[in-house]
Image 1 (cartoon, rainbow, N blue to C red):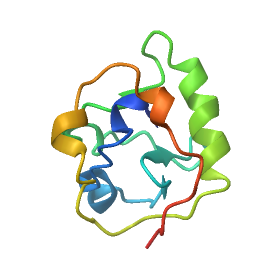
Image 2 (cartoon, rainbow, N blue to C red):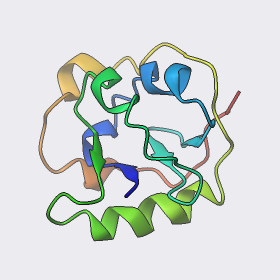
Image 3 (cartoon, rainbow, N blue to C red):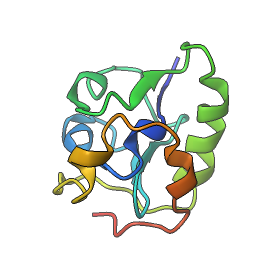
Image 4 (tube, rainbow, N blue to C red):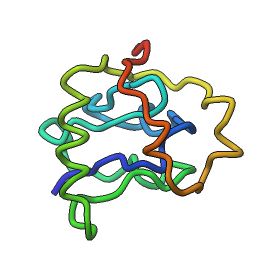
Length: 111
């Protein structure tokens, strides 16, 4: 099993999860985070830290597509290990449907 970041993260990008990850498997895009599924050790400490409920186990229904999504972007975005402020849009975008329409493939700063 592994954990993945789903579209709930888009336009929120809370980074509470990166601070607790013991293996630094989070990667930062411009408006979301992903987890490298081959680096995740399935410890689960990140899941309860996400205020947007964007981190889910790959055993959830429909998670297969998110495993590949996370893999793709974790291989091109920089690693993030330090907590940062969430995006300014986080409060208004948290829980909104249809966020893939505003997903950005651009990398974040990492750090």
